[in-house]
Length: 279
Ligand SMILES: N[C@@H](CCC[C@H](N)C(=O)O)C(=O)O
Image 1: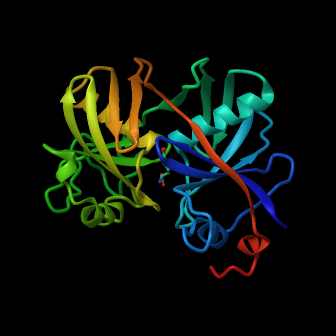
Image 2 (image 1 turned 90 degrees about the horizontal axis):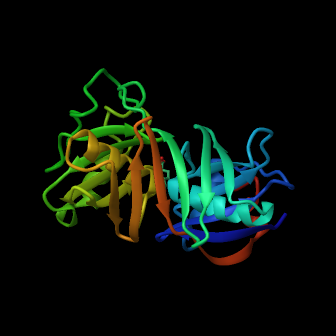
């Protein structure tokens, strides 16, 4: 059966969004990979399936282009908030992911703030495969070492470097994503502190590779910089696709504010949803 979808993005981190609230849809990893192929499918950094939720305005399922599922996607959460707010006629929403319940506010200027929940910082939270100080992880590749571990509903390792532009992410990103220290793999950020309120970051996303922006990654970078005493509790994180504003509240919750955009709508051909799509 053909399914309608929206293509949305946050700072160039792009999503196929399928609203399955009234017509349930359960996708296999193989189907997600087929839709995610940028030549033979539609292409996305993440595939978002919206479902009904008894205790929230909406549930969002998050799938990577390799078919794996994630517990968080900050940029997509802003897009979903904006989309659902329009339909429900309210600006404050609750959005559930497999990691928990998030709050979001759509502002009059179109920007969206998401409360990404508390940053989790214990070694079991990241998770790591063995006990380590999450302020100084042992995982290393090339010039990248001494990362800070942060879980924002998904795992992140933040490496502070003198010049984030100079890092060979296509080489070191996949090595670190699959490092044995990370039993659930890891999103990898390289970050350069430009001032106490401005940090430049680039990202290698688990299951997706290099993307132009990662909202949960920007939260992790903010938290990591603050934990290291390098930044103030409210700061701007500059990604390839633009800026996100991050605030780490005293109660541990991380607020992320940024833009959303819709680029087109379309219909998935039934062949992409064929159950016989090879695994
Ligand atoms: N782009 C996202 C993060 C998407 C999930 C990530 N690749 C993972 O596997 O955890 C964001 O904006 O946070």
